[in-house]
Length: 263
Length: 251
View 1 (tube, rainbow over the protein chains, first blue to last red):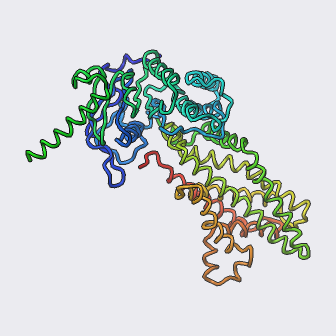
View 2: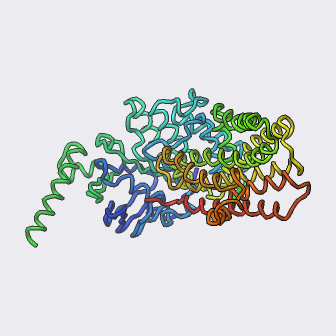
């Protein structure tokens, strides 16, 4: 679908170096460095309040007071040309409650791909996006009349319009039933495998880590570790990513203590 | 790619259509917007049953004030919702220009204002015997500009409201002083000089003056042109200030 031949294959979708974000008097992210590889699912995991959403907002370009290097799809984050290439889903569903599912998508599609000449393409995209999130039966229901899980899927459908190269999804599966969660993860894998999309998915539920190709473990505004789930488990000698995470936290705490005592 | 820097007509129209579609799902709001001004004029006509002159002055002034207040309220709540629901952040992360969004809102509410003002003006002129010497079309023009001013003010103050409670409270804060000083209750030149000076810099004064010019003069007076220009210029200025409150990057 997309032609990647002109680009060197090693260029990551997101590259951060010394990334710092300040909100008010608080430093929410301090000196982060990480990469998100192309065409794969990278899970951003960590407890609530560790800075996952802020990091995602920085990648999408809606976060103020970002310093350091943050390149997204080969451009500095927030570059105007990225706006059609990134799909972003906030934690709370951001759709119009007083419009139907289809009317919501029609509007966002018209913003992404305006003009009368594109009307047919838009209609196809909207129908496909509704089908992708399994809401075809609710296409003409008001978004405000849907359940919480359904509304967050409408929000996800908006991000799927226009075939974005990078999808940034902030806790997309929170509060969904197990069947739906499995279906969505299947969709995410299809998006990566068939459409060549890169996904950055956050979660505070560690069991979702196993479904990702690549992980970024975060805690208190810092990246604890990055790598494939398998590699992280092997490195820490743990059975699950959750145990691996806990061991990494302990290691980091021990390292700080040693640093302080030798000072 | 500079597609987002200039005003994009298809995106503006898509936004206006979306705002109107949202309104269509809320028939009660439409009914209130359209009917309340008519009911008020009707009431007023019979409150001043014995003094037709008073009804002429107050009625004409209200034809200018209604669209301003309605559009102020509707826009401030609508844009506040847009900010708090996350749709604004989503739109600004997409290739939508701030101008597209603001022009879309102005266009949609302008259309509602045309209907509202046409009905109110028609009712006042043809059924309630409002005695207008000038053209009713000019009344409509002023009403439309007032609606634009209301939209602009609403958009601007919504940036300073954190909740719908606060947004509603901005109405007495922003609108009532103008209402008191615009010449509706007493001619402005009969006020205390300090208040008169203040009323000289408040846009609603010009909205009401413009209406009264049409009421008393058959042709376009220079005072009318001045009033209309002031209202339009202030509306555009406030819309620009409103655009500056829409930030792509937020803390």
